[in-house]
Length: 292
Ligand SMILES: [Zn+2]
Image 1: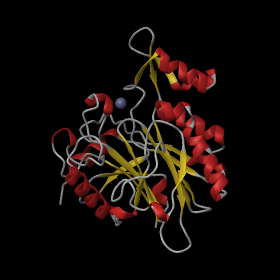
Image 2: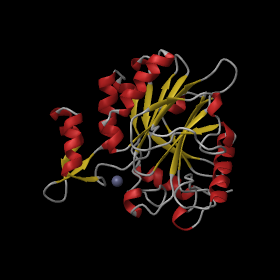
Image 3: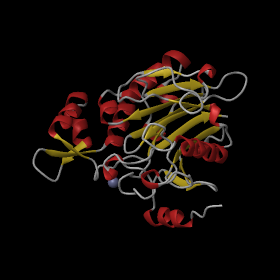
């Protein structure tokens, strides 16, 4: 059994908001907001508790970044044991920084983990709990981008989005909520939304062209909350999670039902994978969401 006392000490010292670290075999990040729903399987992985080595150390959950596939499969086995599920229950998105939403059914079980995916350009996935048995466990991969978990307890529907800057300026969270409304009759005012570990405003510096994309996608008042000056002229810092929150509020999600986990991938790059800090030489975190 792996000790996580170091991580616990860290978590307590920083007085983090919106999440807690848990796990016996491997360390997991759990949303405080979504933890109130005992029927949910909800977490983000950390680097701790896997078998991958080198730049992938140790809990890498990405098959496409050059790691030994056998080690990645073993990492899925370990984390699934911790969650009380099988790898064949998971369905991954196929992320390309676009804003397409796919409805996931039982026919998709295992895709991205135990079976190849047969879809592309899918950065948000939604599903619900069928009459007979648990829902598929949705999964998305991140390392600085924002994982957005949404739960509609009235209709037992869930949605999971990958929201980097491109997804964020395309309002992928609003598109996912709209699709959940069409398919599952989800009302935005009923949902609970949590953003998982992602790069913080202090660590996320962007150029003028990306700042311009935010100005096109959000009002100037909203941009006042999302953007601030960077270290140099024509550089900016962007608060991706805040931008996701603004999109969610505009879509009708209640403020009190939104949680922005205060856990930066770059500030905590020993515990989490950060694309920025490693210049892309890295493993990948996974966020999972399912209904038992
Ligand atoms: Zn940071």
